[in-house]
Image 1 (cartoon, rainbow, N blue to C red):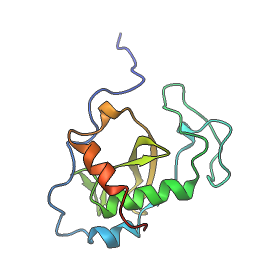
Image 2: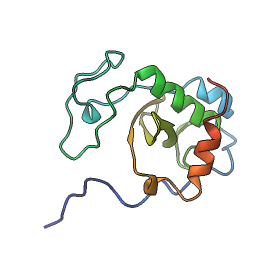
Image 3: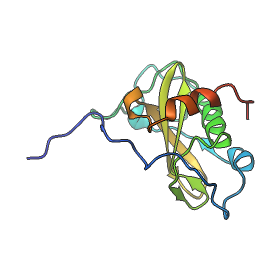
Length: 146
């Protein structure tokens, strides 16, 4: 029987994008199009009212930090896209994954609606950030707000 793991030890995605795809809008433009929707699977009470979801934490899902507002998560996502702190895998014009620091912790965002550019995200351990990613993510945090 296969065991369930609470956290995957392998890094999601093969790593950060190195060359921006030519058929995708430039990062600054794409950053304005992404949205953070969130997911009820990673929410437990108390939840910030800025999220328009009913909390329904899955037993094997990592719990989002309840003090994070949707606007803060969306700003971090947009900053990650603008700074190219995204995976080399794209679905349509949107990167499949993006990484950021929110409320002092590393987070990963996963594309959940490729037509609308909507993402959900959750905290990850430092060891789950792609190799060399800590410096890239920290550098991104000092960029302009989007």
